[in-house]
Length: 412
Ligand code: FAD
Image (cartoon, rainbow, N blue to C red):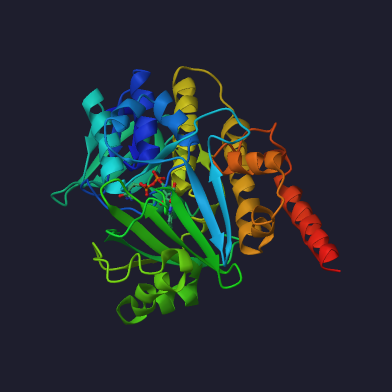
């Protein structure tokens, strides 16, 4: 049986970053990926903080060579209200831009580079069983021929995203505390994109904050569009050949006419039940990263950044452990990751209960508050000097209350 230092399940951004880092540390790595690449996956708008992770794992330069759409901020709308964030005007030190990417292309570039560096990557290989022993793990996968093969490693990293291989095999899934929501989306040819519309992600909240839509322009003149809402709402958008979804975008002033009769590049897809948690993120000889841990909600485009952050952090700790150092997975991995997820949880809740909209759409939002919120939206969720990170649990609620109170006072 072939023996590796680390076997990584999944070749998404989390798996690629982890594989690249460990290979740079001269570890013998095997990546097992179920699909043939390029493959479609949703999650196209990145956050500036993920540039740090790509850079540290040695994957940034290869992505820079491609012509991905530069993203410098995000625009939020609700009714007639509008708030544009520019990452150049943020509180935390760091990257002020990132990209909007078709994930089929982006993920392939990353894993091709990992392979070019010398990592063993096997596509069309689905992991079906993982047996944990004391000193090594046995990973069994279905080869493209259908035949089962087993390989051994000192450590297993589960970066299987929506596949959630180890949470399923080890019964680690935990229901999310968020209302079950879903999304309907497609890509289209965006011939009527204007300069005024800009190239940053566009988000519009509606139905009393219960639903929102996105438009994510790509550099090749195509755009990703989608709508998110509670399960019954997205089912109604998807029904009858996505009839309501096709009409939806014309009902908003800023998008009126832009996508009318635009050619869809694929039939609208629906995804539901993506919000899910996990009982534990590590165990003896294994760790979960990226979406295989907890996924909350797509509203702040945090998925890929959390995937690269966790892939990199886990890879660093695996490396130390394999080098004979004692590592504290609970303190230095699970708690750190949970801390970041909890920041986003507060923002997700504040989005759907309208507190965040009250703040960002208020006429007189203080510029330092806006910069601090902008840093969270850029993915700098571990910067505890930022009060909008440190006090995430209370600050949005309190500020929204004050803004609403002042508004009421002004009316009388
Ligand atoms: P993935 O990218 O899912 O990669 C996991 C890989 O593992 C896949 O290639 C899969 O084929 C492979 N795999 C699965 N099972 C097995 C198996 N048994 N054996 C071997 N391989 C396996 N995030 C953003 O950052 N920005 C966004 O704008 C954004 N928008 C989103 C919109 C919606 C509607 C949703 C639902 C999510 C969105 N996300 C977004 C989140 C994003 O999709 C994920 O967070 C991200 O893809 C996670 O990356 P990953 O590397 O963990 O997993």
